[in-house]
Length: 148
Image 1 (cartoon, rainbow, N blue to C red):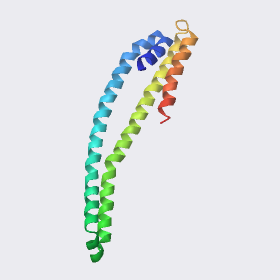
Image 2 (cartoon, one colour):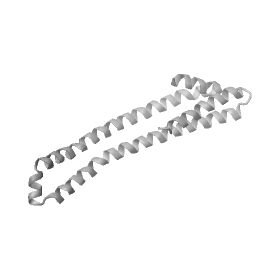
Image 3 (cartoon, one colour):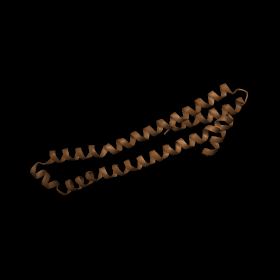
Image 4 (cartoon, rainbow, N blue to C red):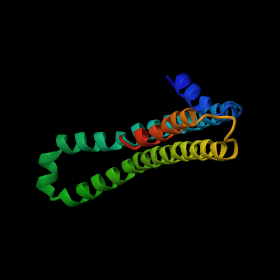
C-alpha cells in the first residue's frame, strides 16, 4: 500500500521520484531509533511496576498487623512513592510517541511543500490532475495520522 501511495505521489511530478530514496532512508532511520527507544522504555516500565505489585501483596498479607499498629499512613506513602516511580517510564513512552507523531507530520508537511513547489516551478512538465492526486495523497496521510 505504501508503494502504491508513493507511486501516486511521484506521478504528480517526476522530480518527486528523486526524493523517495531520501524519504525512505529517513523513515528507516526514524524507525530504528523509535523502535529501539520504545522497546527500552517498555522494559523500564515493566521493571518499575514490580515494586508496586510486591508492595501491594505484602500489604494485603499484613493488613491485620498494619491496622493493629496504625501503620496505614507510612504504607500509603510508600505506595504513592512506588506509583510515582512507576509512572516515569510510562510518561516518557507517551512523550516519545508524541515525538514520533510530530516527526511524521513534519515529513508529510515537507512532502506537501515539495509537491506544491514542484507544481509551481514546473508547470509545463506535470499535469494539474496528477498534481492534484499527489497532493491529495500527501495531505490525506496527514489527516489520517491525526485521527487516532
